[in-house]
Each structure stands twice: as structure tokens, then as C-alpha cells.
Length: 343
Image (cartoon, rainbow, N blue to C red; front, side, top):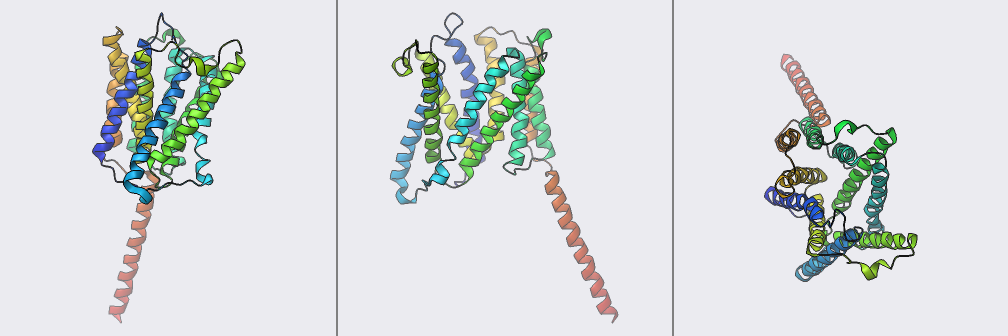
């Protein structure tokens, strides 16, 4: 795998934050009379297809440069693993729908931050990536900061929802984290070029999104076939959303390949704060103490997570055991040397 500098990782994470923070602003600006004048399900399809085209172009360029030295795994045993993230996200989208049936929008946003902690646990369990105590504390602060920033406007209904709503929210968080961690596993399981791996991810993603639109047409036979009115209601802002989603996805896959899913979580969570802050100027959002408090907590969390910290408990225990064994061996050697001298 190519050696990537810390500076490159920070630049890509910063770009992901910028692109993600502008998504909410663009989607709000694309509304006409408070409603979307286009089929929102076409956005993911076009974004996946755009990512597929960009990845194909880069793969072609890389193949021209490296030729036979380019590592590509075409075995079915490897390719068959790539539809799984799309399937997970398909279930995740349906669970989100059921969650919204039981909770209000503000509570849904707050419960959505559970994916931060679940990502940390799956990152630890599935990928065997141990986190230090400082990093666990940082993830907890990130969850708290994201939730605090969204408390305003919830009123008396905050977190007052049926138990089933909380269960669906927890399931949604687990599915979201699972998809992210599993995708990282796929991208890092071998040294295949990222562009080939992206082609597999986005190829299957395009197929699944097209299948979803076809299923919607079957459920609503009175409407026309989706392919003939794919861009109906689009304007330049809508196309900016497609481009935004496309490059955000490419940045995410790059981070999952060369950094990790936790970095992606920080980038997207920071973007939420940036979006709220920019909304003050663009959409006359009234700034609140909770918003600025949440931003401050997230900033502390970022510093805490990436600062040099203590070793994970298991690593520390292993190191302590190793040191103890070495010390015992030295003592045994000293005793044996003393007996030899006495003789």
C-alpha cells in the first residue's frame, strides 16, 4: 500500500468536511416552495454513476502508467464481497424510514449520533484496531458535542418517543457503522489499486440504486418509467448536489483506504457543526448557546483523539507482562551468576 503522509490525510479530511458541510446548504437551496421539485432517489443513482466514471478514468490512466505492475484482483471470491456495503445501506435506508415514523426530526438527529460510538466499537472489534483511553474519551465527547448542538428546538418532545423508536435508531446506528467499517475492511484487505476497488463499490451501488427506482415504479404503475424523467425538475443547484455527493464519496473511500473510518466520522461530524454555523449567515438560523457549546466540545474531542496518548489497556497489559518476564529472567540470571561465583 502506498505511503501517505499525515499532511495528505489532513488535506483530504478537510476537503471532505467542506464538501459534507455544503450538502445541507445545497439541499435546502434546491427546494422550491419548501419541497424538492425532483425525485430525490435519483441523486444517489447519478452520484454513484458519476463516481464510477471518475474511478474508471483514473484506473485507465493508472493502467497506462503502470501496465502489468498494476495490482487488480478479479477473482470472484473477492468481487462478490463488494455488493455487501450496498445491501447494508439498502437496509439502513429502510430502517431510517421506520425510525422517523416513531420520533420527531430533532430527536432523530440526536439519536443519529449513536453511530459515532458504534463505529468506535466495531472499529475495535472487527478490525482489531485498539483505541487508547484518550481516544475513547474523545469519541464520547464527539457524541456529546454533536448531540448538544442539536438540542435547541426540541422543546418538550426531546427524546420523548416510543421505545420502538429508540430500538430502530440503535439499529440504524449499528448498520451505518457496520457499512463504514466493512468498507474499510474491503479496501484494506489487499493492495489492489483504490480505483479498481471503487469501480466495484460504485458499480454495484449504481445497480442497487437503479433497482430501487425500478421497484418504486412497479409499486406506482401510474407514473412513467424513471429513466425517461431522470433529471425532471433539476437545475444547476441540483447538479451541484450530484457533484458534491460524488466527490464526497470519493474522499470517503480514500480516507478509508489510507486512513480509517474514525477520521471519516470526525470529518463528517465537524461538517455538521460547520453547516449549522454557516446556516446562521445563509438561512438566518438563530445562533444558540448549545450550538457554540457543541462546537467547543467537538474541537476538544478532535485535539484529544489525535494527540499522543496512553496505550490501549490490552497493549499496556501485554507490555507490562513482557517487562515483568524480562525482569524475572534477569533476576534468575543474576542468581545463577551469584551461585557460580560462590563456587
